[in-house]
Length: 356
Image (tube, rainbow, N blue to C red; front, top):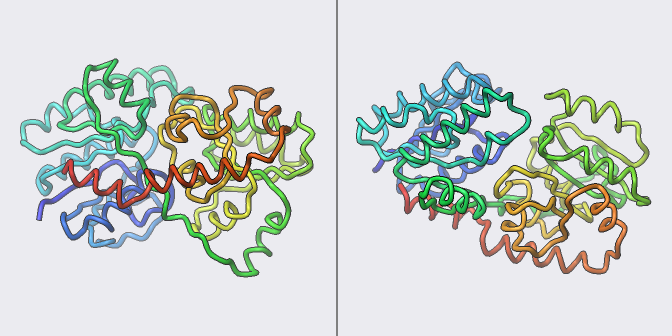
């Protein structure tokens, strides 16, 4: 069996994040065709077993995120060239060694990951480095994968390279009856509430949503799930809004059952990301058949096929929040139809298999 190394995630079992979930379902759906080697960070708080989903796990004593992610990815690739036939590299920070890897005649498939160098959360020197490694990745990989048509267009225009469009699945969400203890843990679900899920970073525009809700005349609750304590941005927002009436700021929920319980009972999902491609949190909400409002950028319009409501600023969001709800069911049905057609792990896994 051909051996495929997956590089650039926190590892398995998947706890949180799009790349981790992708890795989980590739190793489940394709384990009869490929022997997987998955690189994991010993600092991810997960168990350190040697195997998961039939994949061999290799643990490194480096963080998979932040500055250490560069070395984490590089060491993973240097290890993988001695064991794998194909390297699936998720993200570009370690791509600086791609020219060297070509010597070993390994197939390199890189998931572009997005326009990381544009994110305001990175200092200037980090953004320059990320732009540089993006260029190396696109030009030296055998196959470039982009998770959104907007990124495919960007790669073609910027580098004259044809990228393969492979999005994310969302059909792993759980739709079932839930036990009473979850209602006790999250009592707000018995009331009407809006929901948003995202990391606490400025380009995810959580501040915009909170400002709009504060400015609106809505009597419903707003629930936002985020990693509030991981950044000054998140801490300041929680300090400012946690005492607001009808605003519930939950810390990140990693349990799939609990997260889906909260999503299943929402009456509207608001997606505020501006730099993500096909955001996993968005396609999961679409698989829940939720009515959705999206921040108005090309990536979100491609993901939702221009079939939901969009906003660019606080005033536009207030306006659509206060408008009629008669179209909500229609939006939810459209979102699910798109997700069922495009965002299923069986489809995604088959596309990756064709590249390995």
